[in-house]
Image 1 (tube, one colour):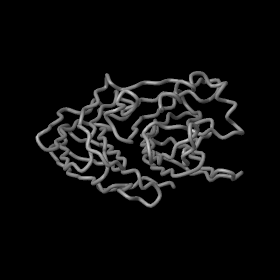
Image 2 (spheres, one colour):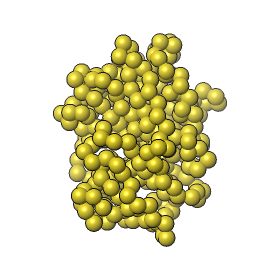
Image 3 (cartoon, rainbow, N blue to C red):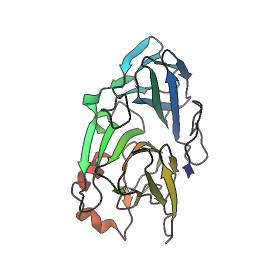
Image 4 (cartoon, rainbow, N blue to C red):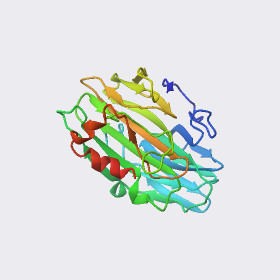
Amino acid sequence: MHIPPYNNKNIPIVNINNKITPNIYFNIVKLKKDQIFNYQTPGFETCIVPATGKLDIKLGDVIFKNIGKRTKNVWDEEPEGVYIPINQSVEIKCISKNTEAFIAGAKYNKYLNPFEIKHSEIDFVQYGSDETKTHRKIKHILGQKQSGKVGRLLVSELYTVGEGGWSGFPPHKHDTNINSKETKHDEVYNFRFLPKKGFGLQLLQPDNDKIGNASHIINGSTFIIDKGYHPCVVAPGYQMYYFTILAGQNQRPLLQNFQKEHAWQIETIPGIKDMIAKFK
């Protein structure tokens, strides 16, 4: 489902127990210097990632200071974040001129310790090629490096490399639990484009259906995925970024099921097998 960009006024875009993706929470919080935002997500672990600006983040007696390195946009610098356990009362304070922060969450039932994710701890993957129109890079904020410290939440930033091209290709899905083949993971994207006037298309094709639905995505679009194959493409002349939240129903590692008609291209896209392995 496509949610066009709007002023959410710091109210969750995907709240806990959403009917389409009940395992995911997503909010975008915008603050000016010294403004404070408080939240609590019962039964959901979360991760706070500044898109731009700097934050101090407080939960109880624990304070994480000066989180965030980016000033202009998501292409400006490397990401940073803070992992928040379930059921915590959290205070976010803007310490820069202004800030825009993503809050990603996944349903979970155990308390784990909070921690900071520094830019040096981001797991970086680059794969594809200009020739195959699949060149992109992924920055895993909560990825394999944080395994054992997080419940069922995966958080990444995905960038197309160059101008134009496909992402999430070959088409894949993860809406069913099939041993050693596929896992049930809800997913939410938030898109950005460079320049901002850029656009793309997000395809959603249910299994066994020949024709899917394509949504016109623009800067600030949010897309919710509960089932189906879901590649996307950016128009020539533009770069595309999307903030990605994955929440496993029964486990954290993701197993992607590639559409059989197009799975042969796994053998033709440079580095894609390493990318697939990073989600496991």
